[in-house]
Length: 282
Image (tube, rainbow, N blue to C red; front, top):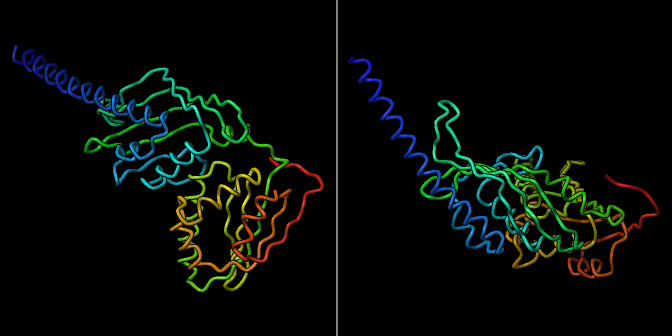
């Protein structure tokens, strides 16, 4: 009888605990829904208020480390710049569980579809996604986005217009500082600019660094110039870039637009333009 009574008490305790977690799940799901609604409205500043300053986030980019709050902010701005008419349609919301106990822990996750219109091409996007959210102090603290970002961008890209920029630079700072800054900077560009196809730093000699940039077209390079110019999203980071590196020559391969040439001219960097005869890119 005592054993039976103890089992009943245990089941009641577990039921109450699970109910508390489910109530937390419902509350946090409403927060996540409000967060997505602001994304549809392209209200990035309001979205930022939902982000915990110490957050860790899985970014939908192969090989990229977990992102922090600044990476997530840059990604949000990037999506809202590149796309209009953002709309999320959930298939279903599910409670997250503790991986060790299998008991709901108050987190939430969702399977669904994002629809949008790509600003540059006018193409419609239909993207199947999965998102997970963990919370701390009422803010989004951990989780991530899972979807085929690269595949989506490839469908929007006319590779015939691709621009490759070879940037030759010197540096006077230590190798460790060059490595640390290069990792930080390429991550910022990667998250902010979906139309940037590649951004690679290489050591090519004593105190010499070569940066190879690839963009889907001239407009994508113009967008990067806008982001690094005064008042741009990563203008402060570009100021640090100029303290770490000294650009002495650039060569742009591709059919560069006149507008892009005019935008590059004020930087007073020795620049060569090499048009494409024929070729392909994947």
